[in-house]
Amino acid sequence: MRRWHHDDPVRDGEPIASQPEIDAGTANDSMSPAQPAASLPSSASVPPLPPLAPTRSAARARLAAVRPAAYARTRNALNGAVTGLSPYLTHGLLTLPEVLAEVTSRQPLDVQHKLVYELGWRAFFRHVWQHRGDGIFQSLHEGPLPDSAYARALPEDIRQGRTGVPVIDRAVATLYATGTLHNHARMWLASYVVHLRKVHWRAGADWLYAHLLDGDLASNHLSWQWVAGTGSSKPYLFNAGNVARFAPPDWHSSGTVVDTDYAALDDWARTASAIATPARGLDRVPVRSPESAGEDEGHAGSEPILLDRPSACDERMRPDAAAVAGRDVWLIHPWSLGDPPSDLPADVLLIGVHEREFHQRWPWSERRWQFVDTRMAELTSVRWWGEAETLQRALVEARSVQGWADPHLSPGMRSVGAWRPAPELFPAVDRRCDSFSQWWKRAVRGVGDAAELLRPPEDPPC
Image (cartoon, rainbow, N blue to C red; front, side):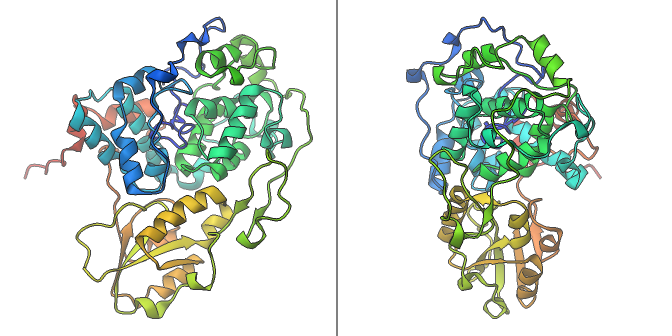
């Protein structure tokens, strides 16, 4: 998605957030249906990614495996040389400056290289979130149809991956089985949901976010808006020919609703009626507590249950004011799972925190909870789960409270202690930019070699 921009390393998901890798200049995959699948890279030419484990060593292994030239050449293909870094970037095990520093230590890159460009999309989505706040959860402007033309619930056949359209059903199965999804597949899925089934982008975005290991609210939801046409100048569309070019045979969808030309798809996107649906709607998968998560599990292809707290949540995770009284505290949250700074006091108390209100609004799959909690447990044995107000009260008597800032944290939590700004790769663009191209021109103005982005900003002259 234009930047689902995501697979990219940068995107959520790998890819819908990351945007697939489609040239940012077009909202349609304007490849002819006649283009053959022979453009897929051979399996021998793209080595498998190192395992996706919630550790710094695993993150570094994936980073070491990044090959910029192969990435730029094959990233649009489902078996292309994508980076697989997105879960690590979302959860703070890697940072954008760290990624670029490692890659450019091995070879120079122009700032316009596709890898750097995709890193920019992640930063741009954060820029939009900073300026618009919760406005990113509403349509930024009207799309091809009024918001009222779209259903607010995701149909059951889409949730269960039983639409009869192979590209959609394979995407859903991959999402549920792995918690990851190539950016291009995210774009196809979102386009089908919004433009052919006439489901509001927000319903699709909330659903996908809940199941992704790399779910980032800005990247995910703004990518859906890019596809929907509410965050871009026109809807993103795809057809069976595009799938055949970039996906393996079991994803090919000839003879289905997407086997048509782009003119017909564009007309459909601007028509209020949806395609015939094979099943009735389903409002939402239940959100469970960990104790009840095993109840009523369906068949192997059913949607995984979503949880609003860690599976290991018990009395030991209750905030304890006495434990922090008079202590220096470093807070570790789900988006700051990297190693703590080296300049902290030797006796600093590391505390992992989960805000109850956030996860009640944005529940996660058990797979994501395990990823986050495994890494958090590696960093500290003290982990708290509770309402933001309870967490704040428990920290009042601490000598100092610090942590890495992140927009996923509630305003209440951000008012506690001194949050350090997270490392940024691109210079701040103070003026709100509503398009990536506007932001990109300002962010890289005067930069030629990408490594220049790693230099500390110069002090202004006296």
